[in-house]
Image 1 (spheres, one colour):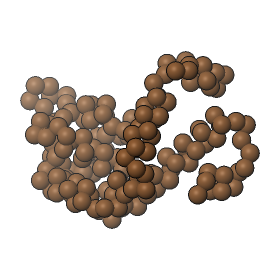
Image 2: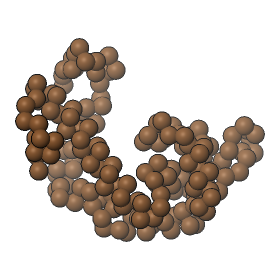
Image 3: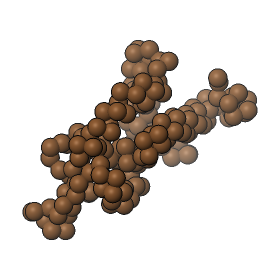
Length: 165
């Protein structure tokens, strides 16, 4: 379905406005789909993100500071989310031996098993983009990377197309 039909708006000030609204709408559409999928396993998107980060660093533990730097949602309260994952038995945390101010976090076997279960679920992350071809996915990734590849000053409302490649 087209953006126009989804939001019942048929006029935009230009393709740039339509593209931004389409990105915002699509972000929420994907997020809602993933939230619903993850709710089956009683975890949030942020918890899933932390588990993926920890699986990627396994067997090396990571500090909450390092986790926060790698998170998709930079506004997340990493310490609180790690505590919830710990209560669920999905991560372990212990005082960092080299810096008593830091906490080392690692994924547990249960955490790895949960990620494996989610990865095997056909309607998981990849299911959201299953109607796209590999060529579509390559193009989408390229366009999204290109969108973010601009100096901060060119993304101001006064200059929406300041940098062209």
